[in-house]
Each structure stands twice: as C-alpha cells, then as structure tokens.
Amino acid sequence: LVVAEVLEFRAVAVMGRLESTLPAYCLALACVLWVGFQGLSFTVPREAGVTQGQQTAASYGASKTTTSLSSQSFASTVPISAVLLAAAFVGCRVSCKRPAESQRGSGRQAVALKAGHALIMQNKGGGHGEIGYHLALALQAKGMKVTMLQDSAAKKSKVPYNMYDSKLSDATITWIDPEDIVAYSSAAMASLSSGSPVTHIFDNYSKKPAQIEPLLNVAKASPDFKLYSFVSSAGMYTAKGELKETLAVKDPPTGQREVEMRLAQELPGKWASFRPQYIYGPLTNKRSYLDWFLSRAVRGLPLPVPGDATQPVNLAHCEDVAALLSAVIGQEAKAGGEVFNCGTSSQVTYQELCDAAGKAVGQ
Image 1 (cartoon, rainbow, N blue to C red):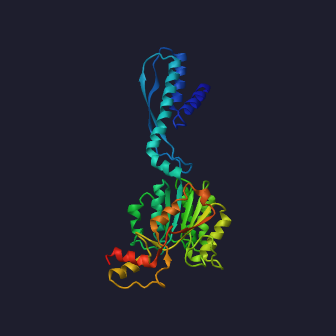
Image 2 (spheres, one colour):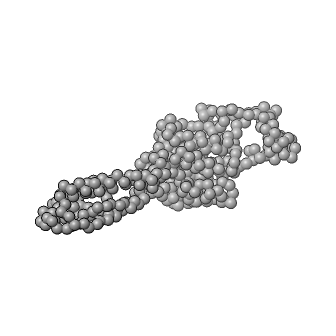
C-alpha cells in the first residue's frame, strides 16, 4: 500500500494532474508481481492516449480533461528499472501532449482571455445608437471577448440591431429592459460567470447616476477590472464654437456630468468619459445630421445655414468614435480619470459642408 501511494503520487505529478491513476496501480502491481513471482506474465500499460476536453485559460468555469489509457498484455520478465522507465515515459508523453492539444482547441479563446473581456451596455437608439455595434467590432479586432447588454426598446428591424446575429455572432448579446433594475443587475452580474472576468465596461446608456449601479457592481466584483468608459455628451458645455475638455460645464450639472462625478468618486483612476458630437456614417440611427443636407442638395433646393455659413462644425464618423473608445485597451493608466471630446482634428465650415453635399449628389 505504501508503494502504491508513493507511485500514485509520482504518476499523477508526472502526468500533470490527470484524473486516472491507472498507471500507478499497474506500476505497483508490477512491482509486487516482480518481487514474488519472477518469470510470470503480467500486464503493464504500453500506450497512452488523451481525449482532450475543452480547457480555458481563466480560473472561471475551467473544464476538466478526461484521460483514456489502453493496455496490452505481454508475457515477459521485466526488470523493475524498465517498468519505472516505461511509466515515466508514458507520463512525460501525456504531459507533453496536453498543452499542444489544448492550444489547438482553445487558441482563439486564449487570445481573447489574454486581451480581456469587455461588457457593453447599449442604448435603444438616437445619436449614439450605433456605437455599440461598431465598438463591438473594434474590440473584437483587438482580441477582446465581448458581451453586450442591449436595451430591448431598440427596434430589432432597424440597423444596426438587425445585423447583430450575422455580424456579431462571436459576441454574447442579451436583450434586457434596463428600467427593470433587478433584471438589469442580474444580466450584468451574469457576465462574470461567462468564462473570464470583466476587464472593461463601456457604458453607452446611462444618463443619471442611479443607472450605473448594475455596471458599477460588476466593476467592483471583477478581480481584474481595468477601466469603466462612459459615453457622455458634449451638450454639457456652456461655451459655443470650438469646445475643449477644460471649458466650463453647465451648473447645475447635467445627468451625464453627474455620472462622471459619481464614477470619479467610486472608481478613482479607473474611469474615463467620452463626449461625442454630431456622429455620422454607416448604420447611424440619427441620420438627419447629414441627410438633411443631402436630401435638399439632390433636389436642387437651397441649404439654409446659420449666419454667413463661415461657422465651423465638427462631424465625427461613427467608426472613428468606436476606434477612439477602443483605444483605451492597453492604455488604461493613461486614460484613467480623463475626459475626451470625440471629434475630428480639423473642422469644416457650413459652406464647405454644403459644397461637399452638392458635390456628392452631382450638383
């Protein structure tokens, strides 16, 4: 029994914590038979094959591997040194095979787990309605695992929501009613049990502090959380024209500003705010920013604009906004505690915008 226990411990250690201890018992039996009945026939394992189950690189939901060992009988008097050498060879062979098969079976998942797990809360539509879709694509391109909570008030028949199944098939998307705080909290916390801890949150929904509670709880519960990115609004500035992050904001503060203040209090150094302006581009919900100009230009109608048309305007492409949001990956220390206006580095005047619209439709 002592020999069996010692050999079992050694075999399990050599084989990398395999579930089966069959080689150890066979080895112990071989030793006993060799000592008491030299010259008789006995059975020892000759081949070992591994059936590899799904294996994850994270501590969440790791599945156990299973092992099947095949044996073949042969008659011979085997020196104990040969038996020990054969057992060690079998164990080393299995130990060497497991990582290679695991890497092939879960390589893509391992890359995603290494990059991180992003939780997106997406609103029902409006000026930011398409951001969740483009952001999910941008994050997946960086190797991120993506979970999206989508406001069920969004119209599934419209873009980009009707493209989720075909274009975001690798993401986990759950449609929820965020007004139902219990259901919202449950869905948010469920993201923690999906196989990897949540490392990043992108909030494209909240407009008042009370609405961030479910996501805030996830951030505090996740062991490897890095940054809470909040999609805010540039409508909080009191100034007109060119807007800078250092300019004064409205007082009393807007709901979005109150969210920023709450995040600074609850997650110091682990939050960032993005204030987009006039978003355009493919799959956008609020198309009137540019469609109004194009609609009139294509019909040859005049384009009324403020003043003498020299006023500058800043238009941001939706994919550029998503790229800016996803740029925090790997730069969390620099982005933490900062506010970013989402716009272009150069502005155009209303006159240039009208000229571009006319040119686009051949006018």
